[in-house]
Image 1 (cartoon, one colour):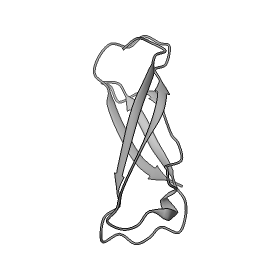
Image 2 (cartoon, one colour):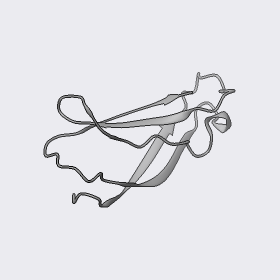
Image 3 (cartoon, helix red, strand yellow):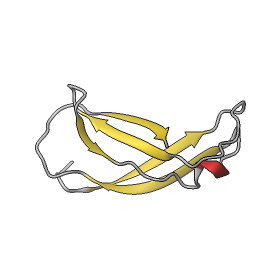
Image 4 (cartoon, helix red, strand yellow):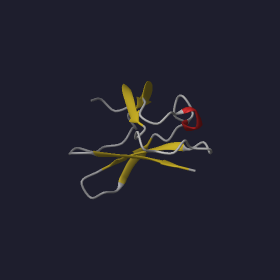
Length: 85
């Protein structure tokens, strides 16, 4: 994909059926790593809806637009995701 191009990313989160309802909002951590596990770029954001509205056993999906950074890298990339306060 060309540098600087827009990419539509669809996120899907599933709250485990046995999970307790969260009482604090968290941010989504999205890190894109190169083959040496160095961060190429991040796309941290607030999930939609906020995690305090998530219900156990439910799945939440939303789409965001990301822009590929303007630097040279050729090779595989890994995406790591999670939630943090």
